Image (cartoon, rainbow, N blue to C red):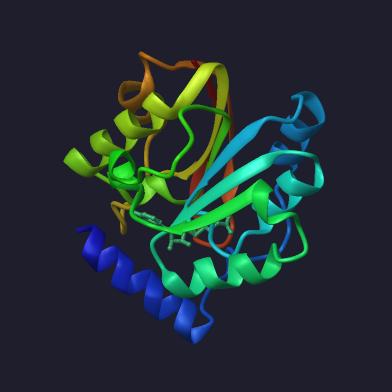
Length: 193
Ligand SMILES: C[S@@+](CC[C@H](N)C(=O)[O-])C[C@H]1O[C@@H](n2cnc3c(N)ncnc32)[C@H](O)[C@@H]1O
């Protein structure tokens, strides 16, 4: 399943069909950056590195992971002006985090904007377990996920998110909205360890 998704995302980056790549960090993440002291952050499904750039500009060290090489390359170009010791971008599958030995032991902030919600079954469980193992005690996980629609099973319901991550994480808040780009209900979640 992840191979199909990698092929789909690779084709979309190649054709420029990437409506999510707005170059703007969502206000939900900006507010977190205003609130938390800088530390180590991990962006899962980092795309072309827009959020990584804002994390770096706010004094964080950041690692980003995406399984599309061209997205990882674009992220590296976007971040080239920041000190290289403060960021890394990895071409890797987020369902296989234990296989990425270069990751830091723990992150204070983990972000997923529109990546994990495409996973189901064992892949989703592997993703959630790998992520939870990397979150620092007291750390924050910010998740943006679309909800499934009658015409598309892609997405996570709020119930599924809670079952997937809690425990060990706990849900602090959820904010429901609409994803106009895909015409689906969507939610932001703040989870903590
Ligand atoms: C909707 S895009 C969002 C990108 C970025 N978070 C943003 O907001 O601009 C989802 C991203 O997740 C990546 N992705 C999806 N599934 C993945 C997986 N299993 N492992 C790594 N990256 C994945 C895609 O290549 C794509 O860049």
